[in-house]
Image (cartoon, rainbow, N blue to C red; front, side, top):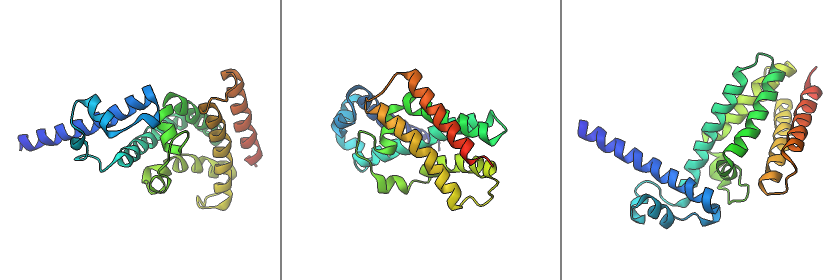
Length: 200
């Protein structure tokens, strides 16, 4: 039994090492430089070993995407827990979303296809891709006094927030950025403006 547990632990460690190596390469050289051969070089394994863990490069990208959504959700839940009012929760969560995007730029890029190829159909099938929706919509519903989380109104307001915040993040990730102070002011103005517009 101990032997089986040890083998399982070693397999999980190798799997994590593959993902860490992929992220390391991307941080140093960009998404276009990522290859299974480079990952194998970093972890000092042969490339065929990687196929025992991931079917192809897209499978690695998808797992990094899943990891990104889990990390983002943790940050959103922490930000939400610091406030009781839905307006404050929304403001704190969108600021946390912004911070996550720049603290984890490479993960954000692969999660949303910013400056990289997105396996969009596969990403949309990930249960974890729904986590931002699950975090934000209850606060939007509470603020607007709407109980039906499938309401078209909630959906519209969520995508209004997301379009503005994601758009500003994408502009900056692509390098067409203003100063950090200006960006944060634009972000806060946009968030507070939308919150005011949906507050009864």
